[in-house]
Image (cartoon, rainbow, N blue to C red; front, side, top):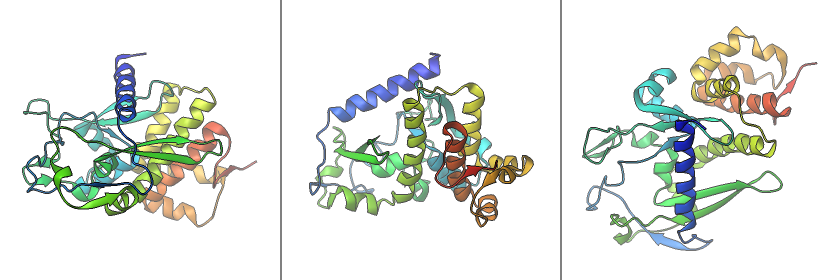
Length: 265
């Protein structure tokens, strides 16, 4: 295990241990919370973070910044590999030379990319743990993260988990994040750790959909696949559709089956 793998494993273990120490928010249970500039601790949680960016997080962020995928990764993130499966993940780089190592997108007035902030930021103050059941379905658990500095819990607005997730616009985030998690879960089930070439392919198909679109055209990829004939045009025109296609293609490539694709014989 190299240094980046060790750091990723430590972060994963620390996150799981932290969630395990928290009370689970059960169905029908509620919590009070609000965050706005009048809350005394406003912005206090937006620094010194180990914030992993999923492919969909990255797509939304770089679109808001009008950056290509490669440029975004170079300016704002560090690449790591999950130690057990070798799947690539980007970690948002905090500003190390400023007090509290702030997020690069936070200002005194709040988040500069608020409409496109990552899923972890949207979920807070909840923590979300997921796993696949025996039928391959995502099982969720939610926990209330009550950090000592946070005064948002003194606000009067009441939420349960479903109302909070809806208010924070998490449907698309969880859809794509859970699909990426499924690939990693399948790799664990099959005892697979990606080789470097395979990890590079995952990074291409998920973290750089703009480059993946070029790859699809250059390699005539659609000519080798059985798929809905209406999809290719949309995939090459829309990076979100390309991200979805990339997930299906990787599942076919690594595990031999896909929800929407098959190899031509």
